Length: 339
Image 1 (spheres, rainbow, N blue to C red):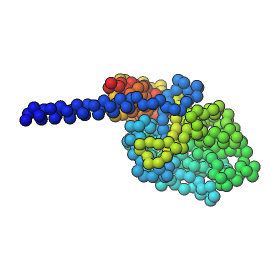
Image 2 (image 1 turned 90 degrees about the vertical axis):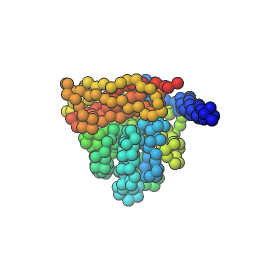
Image 3 (image 1 turned 180 degrees about the horizontal axis):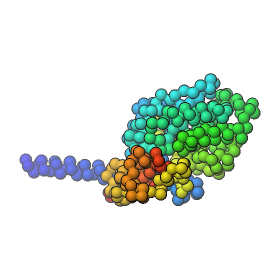
Image 4 (image 1 turned 60 degrees about the horizontal axis):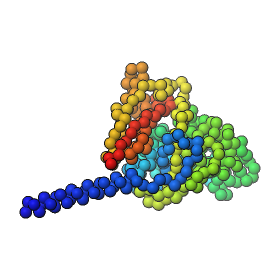
């Protein structure tokens, strides 16, 4: 009897081991991405993310998204009506922000704009700032500036009420207001709109650009830091399609916003460890941050975010200055495969 039980237990243990080995093998031997990145980003850190709104519903599984490698989300917080011009709140914005944050996903926010004056852009910026002022925002606040057919922006452009300079002025008015409040700013636009309706050089010299181009390899030649590459992305955490994006972190990504504050990159930062064994879950090493020997406090002096930390490879900790500190800095660590 004992031998039969021993054989049974041994078989169960062997089966569990085989399942674990198969899981890690499958996870670590997936097909390479089918999307090709511009050569300028060859030495950049590439981070995957999504953008969501009310249309994705309330049943998003943020833990599954993080495990899948989704490290940032841009959350729609509000929108201006294309007919009435009234600003409306996205009913799910706070749920999306907080659940993403609770699962270690970096959060940015956007407002869908139909502004046709700089005054309306300032109104949108102030509205968005008010909505997120108590939240942990570590990505830009963005004006989603695009045409809705026969809407107020479309009509203003078609009637020649707005030209390239006007459109760029409107977006930069939003961005300036956002940055004055201590946030990073960004302008969203599809490839064609950016090329034909914006002064893209002036735009790129003053803010970040989130460029939409649904293709496997974009040929957009202007500057951009986020590429929205599909509106039909599939994930394990969302029922239905979702917009998917690549965020490119380059050397100039983390310049301080407020020069009157201490640049967090000038502080002494280190991880408690820089090498970890992958055990099927995200890895989040602790950060020690000192300024002239004084220990800084997380969530008072800085925020911590982690990217590319859901699978074996090189992962990163992003330390963002808040309060008396500005700017960001990045620390790298290695996650070693179990097999």
